[in-house]
Image (cartoon, rainbow, N blue to C red; front, side, top):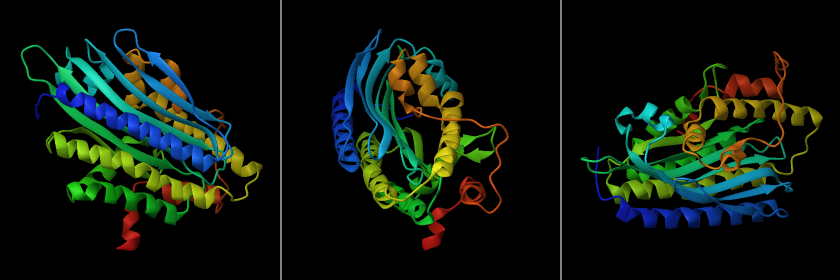
Length: 310
């Protein structure tokens, strides 16, 4: 593992994250055209806090949350030590920005993004630091050109740091956002990375910054194209049903949700990722050859979306 003096870097990372939260919120308000984010500042018992911003009832976005947090404590939570057993007994700092957007129109995908920085320390060893993050797309009625665009932006964000990063982080995303009990991906993927420090601080931080800054160019063109497509009750009900998969993943598998709850973070901020409305239906099966069936047949298994443009 790469070691350094990470506390000297914490302030510059936090500054970037706060600016990223501001820029994303401003762009989403502009894209929505009516609703505004409401901010809640909170303090964590035991160390740290954050700023949660949530937009509800918008013209375009039914709910969007963009959260900043910096929490610290004496013991790394179990969700982190299960992934990294060597960190048991470490104190920690964790800061990041995390967002989830649930649009009104079923033709606009749900999306999630996160960028984060961790420091772990234990007496007798040098501090260990790393970056993580990524973004992923969860469509209900996908357009292949949108999926290709999403992955092109993802690839462009990480290519300057090495040719291996896009295929590696794309594969990691497909594997991470996989609902084992459903045998399907949560959506069409994107990027996911963790434990990034092998490039040294400046380059690792640069990659994390590039991913964070790529989110808006990846997502907003899709919103613009699809926000005015007419839809009916059938499409709305399918959207609500498929949102159930989002809930299942976040409450069963997501390490970020578990870390937040286990570290004593603010519950409302952690669970703002859940959609405002959702439904489940027993043994649902889409009509053969329907648009709903196409989602299952074409889009919910890992594949190389950029081969279409090769």
